[in-house]
Amino acid sequence: MHEHPLTLTSEDDHLIKGTTFTPDRPQAVLVIAHGMAEHNGRYADFARWLGQHGIAAITFNHRGHGPDCSPKDLGHYSDRDGWHKVTDDLHRVLTHARQQFPGIPVILLGHSMGSFIAQSCLQQHGNAADALILSATNRINKPELLAYRTLIIGLKKVFGKRHQSPILANLSFGRFNKRFVPARTDADWLSRDPDQVDAYLADPLCGFNCTNGLWHDLVQGMLSINPRAWRKDLPVHLFAGTDDPVAEMGKGVTRHFRTIRNAGVKRVTFRLFNGGRHEMLNETNVEEVREYILALCQSHLPKEAPEKQTTAPTA
Figure 1 (cartoon, rainbow, N blue to C red):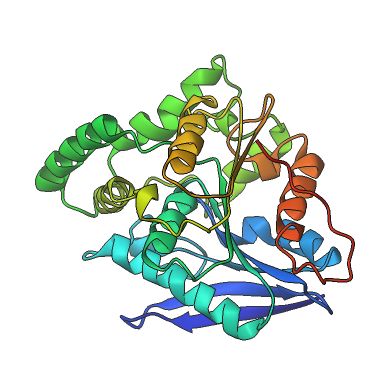
Figure 2 (cartoon, helix red, strand yellow):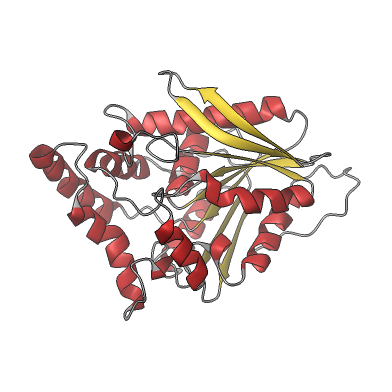
């Protein structure tokens, strides 16, 4: 296994930083788009594990996230065109993956916020990946999102786009954690594993509040997602925990699965992990989740691949 730093330049000269994990004989490459208020380093152990099974991985940090982000920009995409910029950054990473690993499948895994960036990116650039895996995603609830947008616009007018509103923090992470009262910490909603929760809370690059501008960009981006505009032969795989408040305790992500399937996308699979919370890759059954994702990756290997393939779960 070889690990190399990744640096790409965006259209506005922003530096996209990440890491490439390359096994000796990669059969596919998985690009990972992380969630809100975390960073790519949290996926390094998973990337190394994938490498042991012949799958290369590329992790990177979204704007406003990660160790190279300046304190003034933490939790903020951009003052202008933030959603366009984060989706374009992802497209550049996917294009790099094609160039770096020619002839093998490029698979995109988006977690939580990253799942919406991933959907938006492939809605615009359908051939940028050979398959899409959505972790801890949710339906596009337009009435709720429009109400959030109205609130965010008001907060931006009063406090500015770079203000980190405690109101929005309470309506998101704070609301999610109320599902688990009495809670040991403010982040119990992430995982049943207390060690993983404590590691998250101890990480200075995790758990920060995001700006009014980022929230506005995210809501606008989510409202633009329309599976009817997706490439119909793009394989899409969704998974979540039954106790993930972001996925509406399994109900919202189930509705999104049906929406994608009813939009005419030909191959859509879905799995709920019983009792799992928001971060299934940091859950108590992490080995089961890793094997599931590996099976999905292996299901997209060329049929003539010499390695034994594992059948991906379907719904």
